[in-house]
Length: 320
Ligand SMILES: Nc1nc2c(ncn2[C@@H]2O[C@H](COP(=O)(O)OP(=O)(O)OP(=O)(O)O)[C@@H](O)[C@H]2O)c(=O)[nH]1
Ligand SMILES: [Mg+2]
Image 1 (cartoon, rainbow, N blue to C red):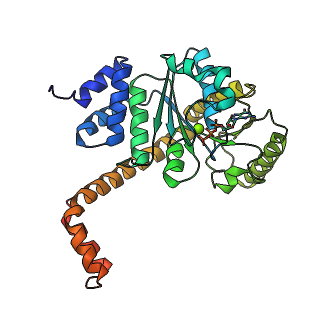
Image 2: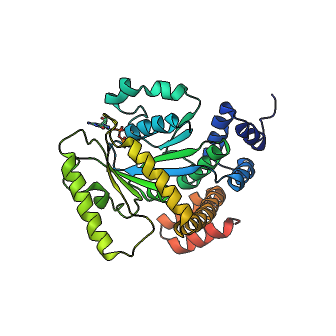
Image 3: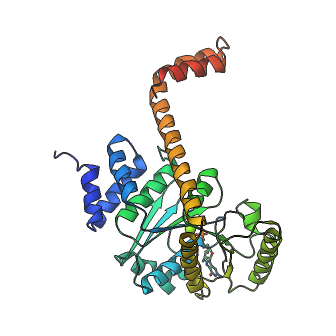
């Protein structure tokens, strides 16, 4: 059997535009391990050209449908886009109503669009670390825009969108009376608010509620180089999608023109360094503890040993 291709060689192919190599390297990034790490390290060092957009919102709020439309707009400009959908509860099809309208299938065949789903369940490494490394690999492949879709529940999911350059929070009408972003505690992380499904009459109320909430917030907050817009959008009619892309581009410009950009870059760099350390610690700890665990658990169960002493033993057996 021939030796498997080194990840560093795959990265070279990714840079040369090889989409098959891109898929393979992404899979390796998801699994993690020492071999792929050097390639991911190199991908990180040369990344930074793509604009990374995190899109979040409660399940079913219309994120995938909106992203499908957004991808079309990006392509219309002649730009390229890679999409990471994290653990979608519905497959990335753009939703049933949109199935034949915009034909995701066609979007999928376009070389300027790359779509990848990632599962949270069964992920061996940390989800956040792996996702951001995958974004670096996509950046290396030369995509102009990278869109990461996550549901706004779960710490990892929220941290991933916070680690992007521009965060879009999607709220849908009719999913309960409160603004969902407030309920989910993600109101503050939005650089852009998108109210989805505005072809529906009950969207007006969601728009009004969101605007009222933000007006309240900006009355007490410090003035900033960026004013968070609230956009009315519909993936069904296409309303507001061009405006959403314009807002994303405007936010990118604002980041570059003000102290917001460097601030955010530092915050993301700190997060990534700390998160990676945490992931490595956990991985080493997990692989070291297995041999001793069963015996220790047995003794803790019988109360011969307390959990604190057991933990110290487990830690002393791991090499960090
Ligand atoms: N009326 C209307 N329905 C929409 C629109 N966009 C999406 N939907 C419907 O809303 C449902 C959820 O759409 P998705 O795009 O899958 O939502 P999502 O937020 O990606 O869902 P998850 O990834 O599962 O959290 C589907 O049944 C869509 O058909 C829209 O613009 N108008
Ligand atoms: Mg989705």
